[in-house]
Length: 253
Image (cartoon, rainbow, N blue to C red; front, side, top):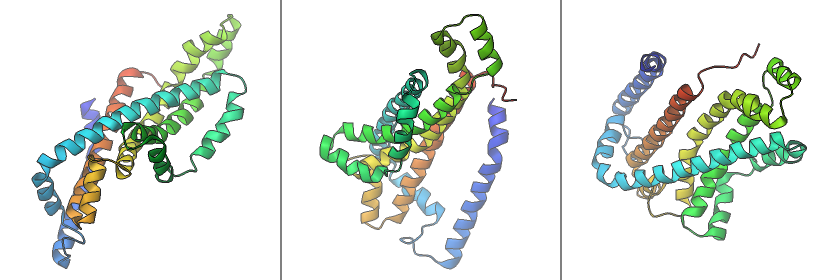
């Protein structure tokens, strides 16, 4: 499995290295000021210098991200199951869920701070709102499209509605559920950073705001790099979990 991941991962890795090399050469050749666009090596050096300070910021962001991601994913799966199982629920509530995504999280977050203060709860709500919708949509799509032949067979032998759900629909929907989880994983870290922007004393978002206010562009890039790395790590963890959990792929033909 590691060999397969390496085969798939080396082309984008080489591309990223090439882009960084061009960035380094371009900035050096043009003599661009560091406050405007620092070179990659300057960013790495600053990240190493800030490592002791970054520890508490990263640990806080990781903790609220994982907790919010878990809550949002569980809520998304629960909503999908309810909309699928209860007659009339999907027709009544699914359009409202879609409309709710038209409200920008950055616009809703200040209201959460007003209603719930500056503690942990509003931050978790922000991350939950970011994470639940992709899981809901993906899981609902998977639940609604089980294997038709197997579905007819189970009905013919007298399977109850609950048995159809647990024995066929939910297992068949697992690949779709993991697709939604992977999308939510990439969103969850940024959701945590947005929550920190609106009221916190630690976290990568706070580090980024302090760097911006002091025109330390290199530190802003350090924060961006950490966000990308954390998102990729969480995405990779979901991919590995999917490989261990889903050992088959449904036949769509």
